Image (cartoon, rainbow, N blue to C red; front, top):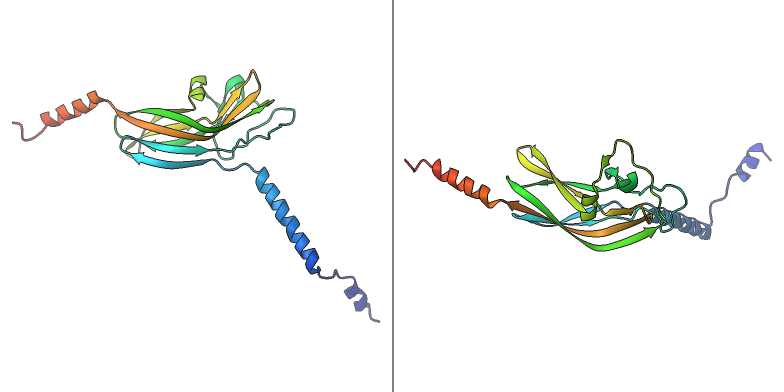
Length: 206
């Protein structure tokens, strides 16, 4: 018998149908486990857009295990900005850019539709260069700030804070589903000024 025959015998045999099905099941199970372990991407959906405001629904994953291990933990929130919360801990938040009417003053109303609380959580410290997240803004769950004129359009930044940290109880309340209403308030005085100026500068008046 030639030497090549021995090499052929050493080659692995094709998998039997049952073995192939088992391998596919294992691969599917591992993929499902990986998907469950990975935090979901935050979701911001525009529900309504009107002349006097907009309505969003915001959904986030808690980003923490139900029973976190000992030691500083980090909230998994890929792609989100992060700031310095209570006790200098690292907290993620959402930021959305809004185009607004000229001269509008914005007000925000937030309703928590679903939340969960995790206890025994010790969050890691925020980066020393991270922006400070004021306590009143965190408590209100959302805040807006003017961004000036962008490409000729007045703009505001909407910041939403789904993660609430209690440094005393070492707990994190996560508002996993929020309804956010942003109202555009145009001051009546400004409207009157525009009307008066428009009438005064009208070419029909002479």
